[in-house]
Image (cartoon, rainbow, N blue to C red; front, side, top):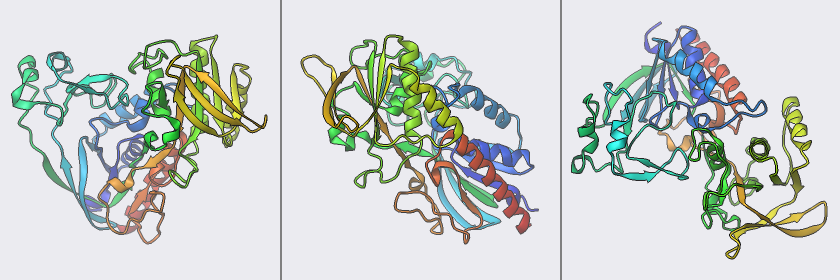
Length: 421
């Protein structure tokens, strides 16, 4: 079998991409991971806990990182983007642009560059809940554990304080983008998802008050490596949050926004309600939903366990409006209580909008043979034997489903390569 026929390109370094690459490599095939951010791990790396077990994702990620680090069959490129894909199953030619990190392999992670850097910008890992320097490490357990210089924010030679501070000569502000060419026999699209833009729902008040946040922001607030080191407080004034509202289907199942259900939002909000209750025994959580969707025995058990907490209220009804009371600074939630047959208002400390999962596969330069549907997900096609979409590139999925799907895709890619050899 030719070298390219034994190589599988994995586009995306999130949990789906990591799984597909590891499974393929441990079966004797070469895997190349292309990731556009400075680190591997994707959205899972920003999570606090998985549902339904409520365990942290760090342990699972670290196991995968170790398997990647010590497997010579796996190569990975961060800050990398696909420029071109040509060819067919068994012989794809791929151009990849490697964007400069401005930090070389001499980096030991000493943090001197961050301490010396005078430029602060919004922290994208924490969804703007705090600031970071232009010279930074994305988060404490980032892989690869190598600092990066923000290409947009850094003043380069007009400042260069990070260069002066680094005694290991690990910073090179003259790095340029470069393009590499690789050959692969099969391609796995693990491009993942992004949170739907909550500011597009003007009735829900996102952007009008810092205390109206999204579910991904809530996850970072609760994370030990997040902006508050896991302390759940109001972004506006640092006050402890004792009354929290969770608004389901924020833009989902709506023909004007996301017409589909993201499948995980209900479970994510139930999970986050437990964050509040565990941290503050006298707190109350309110979840406003259209339909509660917790498919599967373990998820149904999880729902029933959350229901046992009398301080977590599940309210069937659509939220009409969310806004800040200018006099009290409380967040006001206007909603319809369907079971009571009434329209009501509630004052809370914090409102969490459960925004859905928007696919990102359309942001990648793909061959014309790869088709996406009206919602932006890849359409399965038997006439495209060498390219496989996995995880949230083809459907909204939770972490466990994504891992299972990626394992299956690795097997399919191996089978295709075997038939073509």
